[in-house]
Image (cartoon, rainbow, N blue to C red; front, side, top):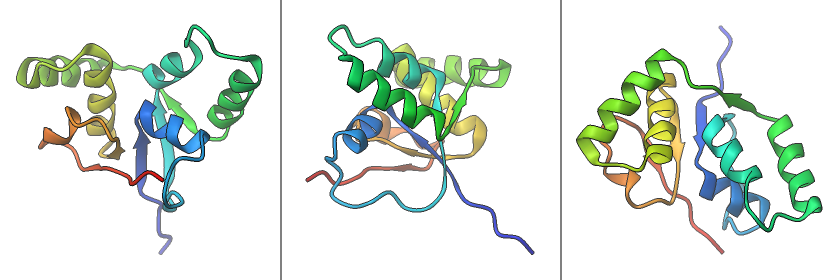
Length: 124
């Protein structure tokens, strides 16, 4: 029987901490994903230098980027109504819920969600 890697969705803040070398510990093994929202957020910073953009693109090419489908849309609506989340946060949380993935985030607003397995990470 082949063991599958756990699905882990990275929130935008965790990707930034990872790329900036600010995580206290290495990421655990798993199959890493990001929402298309994280991709958009990472690549749309106004003062993003070309070397930073290249670093982000290289990182995104090594993991899976999850698009928004009907299930994620429905879950986003439900999470926004229940928790009054900002739209990007609701989409990211709904993506984790839809995939039954663990969400790595240091966003305190998301740690209250009971529908999703959420883990926070220590910083240096």
